[in-house]
Length: 331
Image (cartoon, rainbow, N blue to C red):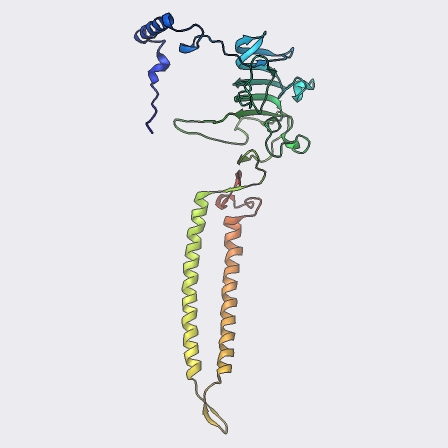
């Protein structure tokens, strides 16, 4: 597959004299032989598209063109919170302090059928092509139909300012850095939510729209530190086991070769059953000792410093916790 290259000069073709002359000459030559209203060179066309209707009395609409007496094509709607017909959202319910902006490219373009100006529709968060929706107060999770977004159950999502972005592909590029953050800014005074309340602990969820099971993300540096300490501990433990095995072998040899005098019978060695019983006692003692070492290690070191709890880091030792308190990942 050949590499696709974009000529940056194309963005400035109208700003330089030489490029502008070339473009105008091409348009003049093409205009003599091409049918009118073809859309080539971004001229007007006769594309028939669905129209935005009915328009609410409070709405201001900027659209690329007008068909059948209504706005059509790419549009920006200055409105009040709604996500469909005029009765939806806080705006549709007559609410105040719920200003909204709806930016759409591709009205009903995801529909299974080709829609024309015979189709009148307002915002369709499922079938419109690409959208940026901003609301002063609303429930963007509900409007975009994500998992666990029922406004009757997901109470914490209601009446919150929000921005929803949806398209087939959504691209975010930072030439130096891209930051995705959650929480309050470091402003003087107290920052609050649109509801006037203080926000809970900040949370970033990464998953699919159908995901409802999120788990804390693993923090890489802390995990590496934990694995190094575990390796050191396992190496030390293995050395102790080797030492115990050597002592056990010496004990077995000494026990097997032991001779003592039995009254009335003369010299005698321990019976096999006595030897086995003695070895079992020693093994039990060693196992208990090792179990104790492991238990103490996990209690004193691992759980408190690195593993924390299932719900997040323990207070007082969050810096070494493997689990993040902010970023959660779905399955």
